[in-house]
Image (cartoon, rainbow, N blue to C red; front, side, top):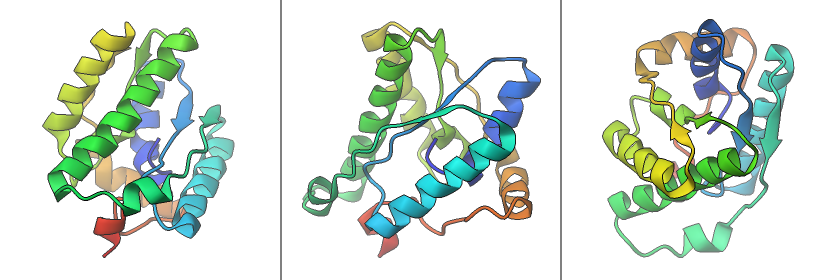
Length: 163
């Protein structure tokens, strides 16, 4: 779960498919720390409102992200890879049959790259990637997040997008 607003629609889709699911909040890319804390807090609020169990891996990595010297696309690859691999590994070690990501909800993210990296993680960690294009419900999810009083951020989370 990258944030509460991007989790709304995927949670609805998974519920409609009668799939049991849990959330994982692992976002070492989000900066500054105040933004990280806002997003984490709002995932907590969302999970309480929707009765969704969420695990949290607190691993704020300011220096790693602040000192990254590659170009924007390399930064996105590093971000996606880190988060997707952590999710797949978590799913595998905790006995889940599948994993997916709310990154697939945003029309602003590189959907095909996310899908490719998740398919690679599926092979590496031996847990199936549940692919779903959540983008069609992005605006609907954002509206519902607004109605729930959840914080809706204006950037993906990394330092470059903040600037």
